[in-house]
Image (cartoon, rainbow, N blue to C red; front, side):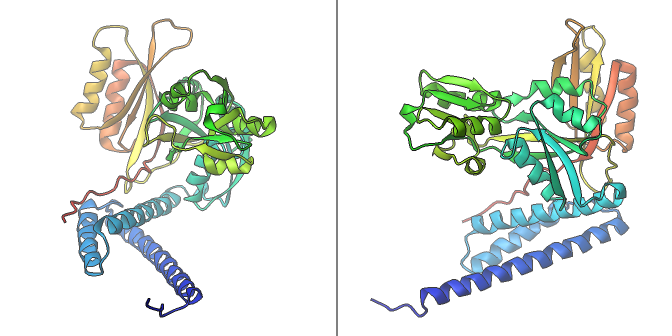
Length: 391
């Protein structure tokens, strides 16, 4: 048996040294990406250059192979690094475009208490802005909006759609009447677990607490449990609190494992969502709209009510097609108090300041009974640049 060249302590010391060097290099690379952003202001070039990203990834894969590193491993790492670089540059450019928005601390309202998915999304979004949070937990979506509207919070974070359960209709309905503007978005991975307060088995559980959305998103797994009582709560955080208080082997909550630790809960079953790729898109609202620089990708969200005649909606959608504006979301909701009348929510990948978007709004104004822009904001979902990985 060959004796190791180094002791385990020596090996761990060297691993720690290398990890620290990697972190230092990542910090240095991030600062260089800031210099890139500054140069793009002078040249008016967009933040993303996917042709260059593609060439960069191919070169890194080849270099990695020479170092006996798997191509998939290299690609995964540098997708994360490129995403961070893009978002870091976008945040810098947005600060320049909105100097009044620069604040070290932000008061943020969200649904539920600490550990709710809205709370996690709030931390995820504002950590990218290097902004500390004053957390304001709310018991309803309406309260989240109202807290911002009356000035008790600077921002509100609301879930708008999920890859499994679809649109969150209550939020769409509330957006019809608010004076707030959408100023940002964040997509949060959702990892639903069955959380318990005491040592138990899945077949002992007969009562399950959660917000209605997780119940929908995990419907297939819950059906497999047979007869089970589903208790609805205002948030996943409230559900976890209840289970922690009840502390019985037949009671569980649906929630995030890390959040469950805050309440002394442990997962008895993980990955219970209908779709393994389970994500929720959240929007961020504020009293004032933001100015989105033309150097970064933007989304514009608007609502409109069309005339009550055949083909009215198609005419509106043709405006977007003819101007080559990509629509990423179309949602219809009933207009409260007006039976059979629909309000349409539309997300498009376009900056409201662009010529084509201004032309689209002008044409849509003539075609609709009502139209309102809910916000223009940076698109912060950085899709990875595809590269073919050959053996």
